[in-house]
Length: 169
Image (cartoon, rainbow, N blue to C red):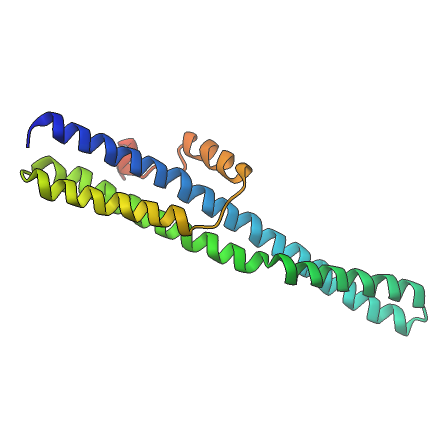
């Protein structure tokens, strides 16, 4: 394989790897955000429900009614929004992007430098790119704020391994 071809394949692999790094991190940020939403809505629903029960026994019927209504609304929001299910979907997508990123990195750094067969190398690149496209189609949509937080975290070094930074223990 000539160096121009190897360089072109390397560049495309780096693009896939970078996309996976940012997209995967954005999905993990969405997981964190949705988990917190679930905890907050669920905790408020439980507290409102418990307080409504207590208010009934203390003959505070109006307060009990308001708290009961709040608990009902919060529970309905949990059922409608399904933040726990959404968090699990984003976690799964983030895990898949992380796995693809690792596969791409290993191919780029271990197999590509010694590859001789252009056809086989191109076929492997096509398989990796196809996996990325499938993930992009199937993954849930995250918020722009999840992506911006991912970008900031990556720029601050959150996605680096010690070996990437030249640090050894």
